Amino acid sequence: MTKEAAQVKTVSNQSVQDIGSTIPGRFDVLDSWRGIAAVMVVLFHVQIVGNIHDLPIVRAGETFVDFFFVLSGFVIAHAYAGRVNSGQQFVGFVVQRLGRVYPLHAVMLLLYLLFETAKAVVPSLGSAADPAFSGSNEMSAIVSNLLLVQAWGFEDGLTWNTPSWSISGELLAYLLFGAAALSFGRKLWMAAAVGAIASFAVLLLAAPKGMESTFDFGAVRALYGFCLGVLLHRAIIAGVMRTREELRREPSQAARLAWTIAELAAIGCIVAYVGASHQNAAAFAAPLVFAFAINVFAHEGGHVSRLLRWRPFLTVGMLSYSIYMIHMFVLLRCLNVGRLADKVLGTEILRPMDGNAAHGLVIDFGNRFAGDLAIVGVLGVIVAISYVTYRVIERPGQQAFRRLARRMTDRRDERLGTVAIRTA
Image (cartoon, rainbow, N blue to C red; front, side, top):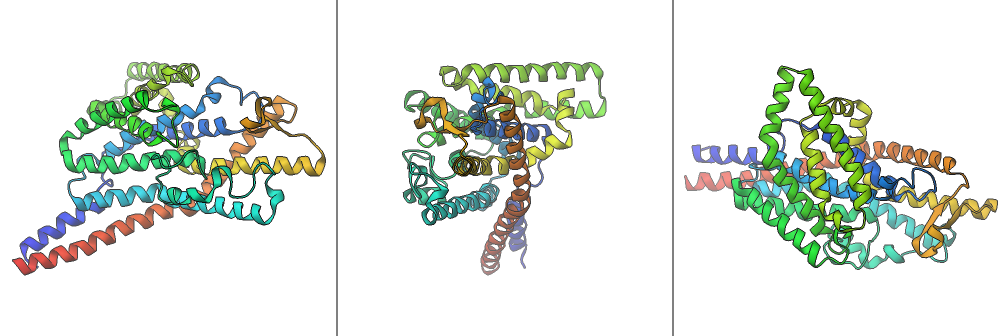
């Protein structure tokens, strides 16, 4: 092999094998926060009457989806900014990001399809108001869900595994990030600034539901938070890494106390803001509030961060994507069980939400504390199932896509090496 061919091989191998694998430091505490955000979204969707259900922060739990977007932008910028410098690296980046989100998405979509088929065969599994392949589960929406573009404005409502709209939005953010990183290089932050301003303007001026956008302007909402996360990384990462190193080398009780106060203040801001901003104009500031919290906890300087490095929190953070992707399917099956219990036992567990059947159904045991126990139990079941899906689907899927990216690189290496040899 000539010198030129060897150089091609070296650079090409580095593009996929090293990209995202030599990240300068992890953010364990932010992983725990991702898990907390996933749990808050689950609690928001749980339709069981109880004290937990009525907590203001739970009733506004959908806002935590914006936390995902900001954190994703921050983490992706940390892993990939300055590391997508060629078309080959762009392809490797996209394949690996698909491997992060698509395998579990595909499996959940298949589960929904199987259940709708079962409803068609056994109508009693559903209800007269919810026949098979109707409403959000119409076959016409299958293609957009398979392509993960259902939040790009192609649908007129939430479809199939409804929380996956946010994954669809993130996919667009990934693609645009990769393209911007390739095109702007060190000036990636400029593209992120333009993206943040433009997406905010679209949400403010054109999106009918503003920061509650999902199927229609959901991708724009995702891009707004994601771009702010990229900008946040650009603004703070040097200081974050310096502070973490200083605290590691010379831990100071005074510094720990100061960071603990900052962490408690960030939590207080989130609790106060989320409950007060739900479904009003203040919701446009959600990514900024979450960016403030991410800034504080990225330093991992206080005692709250020490608590969030406790294994149970880290485990929930590890399972956060599975928790988010499976929870709606599990919650809908709980309603099926409640409907079956009412038929078989003559009970009246299910009732219209807020007295209006158009708002959906809730499970009401007639005792709010019994409802709280049921909510905790359902959450435990979701976490347990998520552990299985993470081990069986999510992690193997990531590894398979990573191998695919490397095989694609190797084939391209061979072609480039052959060309280099012929032209040497």
